Length: 158
Image (tube, rainbow, N blue to C red; front, side, top):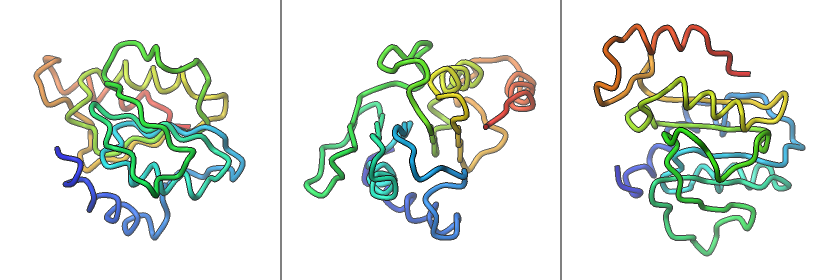
């Protein structure tokens, strides 16, 4: 999906969330946020303005060019969220990790969520929002839908 085609998605989510940027209750004092699969980085920039003391790391397979009006606390990093290890980040680094519209890009949901929880601070929040539920992989990486369904029934998001 191109960066430009994701522009309307940010507006769609804000409307769906009742003009909020996220659905997870977050402290105004959070200091580190990871935006997985940022696309155009509109969501990362918006969240950086909403949480001005937070460092926002926006990841994508090919990060977009930095715009002049991007918040200075937003950092773009090339990263494949489906990698088995997230060596770019520290254990317990983030107060909040949010993920939108990456269903087709994650093939190992158990491994992905494990990485998220490893990199969240104690009490941190993981928010996964997508149009498809239950979550699935595009490729036939697993023989059965039972794998993903079972993994989702065991997941705690906060």
